[in-house]
Length: 148
Image (tube, rainbow, N blue to C red; front, side, top):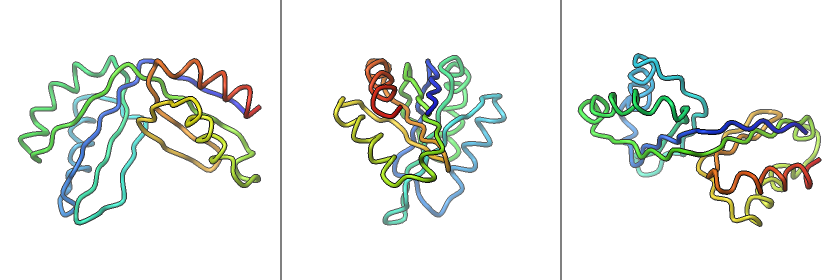
């Protein structure tokens, strides 16, 4: 198991987005055109023709992001919630492809520590979680102790 930790990460979240529009696509294009590098991208399953989505950026990108927020509001009538000063923890291991319940262990640890999960993305052999900076040291220690 390998842990990768990235500090100073902002979660940018959009809630109650109409499903029949290209808001997510338009938003990502506007953000890219502003020269902002997006990392984690997450989307909820649609319900009642609405969904929510979000992405992460480095905290240093926030001044550029704030400049495009006005354009996002005018174009799609959506405003992001921005939560800065977080850490992204990526757990990489081949165990996830071969062992049932690995993700359950990860979230059990997070729950035991009452860590606030802001965003989750996964891959075939990794789980990425964005959590508050205040929770990160305890989470990393627990992951290293209980998942190693």
